[in-house]
Image (cartoon, rainbow, N blue to C red; front, side, top):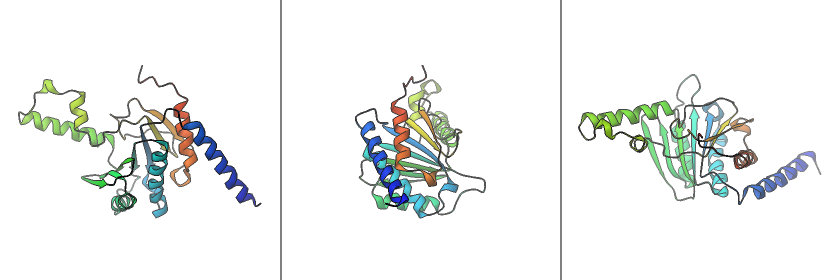
Amino acid sequence: MTGMLARQIAYRLYEKTMLRSIRGERVPRCIAVVISDADLVNRQSIAKLVSLAEWCAEMGTGEISVYVSMTEGGFMPGLADCIYQTFAEAGFPGKVVSPGKVVRLNGTRPCTVSVSIGYGGKHELTNALREIMEDVKAGKIQPKDIDEAMVEAHLIFRCEPDLFIRTGEERLSDFLIWQSVYSELYFADVNWEEFRKVDLLRAIRDYQLRQRRFGK
């Protein structure tokens, strides 16, 4: 038996052990993942986004939100279209959001996917407040009517993640700044290129072992 084959067998056994320990426990209803555009260097790294959705669906997670943060240099032409096409072909429902554009996915698989490409929480919240103030100006609502539910109704992303995963870095992102106020944070010690199913399982297991306080 070669060393590589032995490592593959050990990995599969470890993965199965993790799966057994996770199933039947608290599984996050919604998971958010932050990666960098520098991680999406080829079609394989983009295809792994579909694998992530498949892994989550297998665990019983019903929704994932992925934020592709943009490094210095700006927006990558064609990235949004490539991600959309990849998920559309895989049959997942949801949406792909980039600055100024929202494209819907009409799949039927059991995990809803939301992908944000360079559209962070500051932009989302600012646009939501702008829409509300336009309604106030038009006389459709009164300022006293503005509450949390109204703000949430104007947000593009409705998922409130139980688990928020950041790959490759130990720092926060402005993604879902309204929705993730009570999320459990997990910083993976690998970047997206090296992220495997077992890394997701570790994050979920870590989440299950925590006592959630929801800000209390």
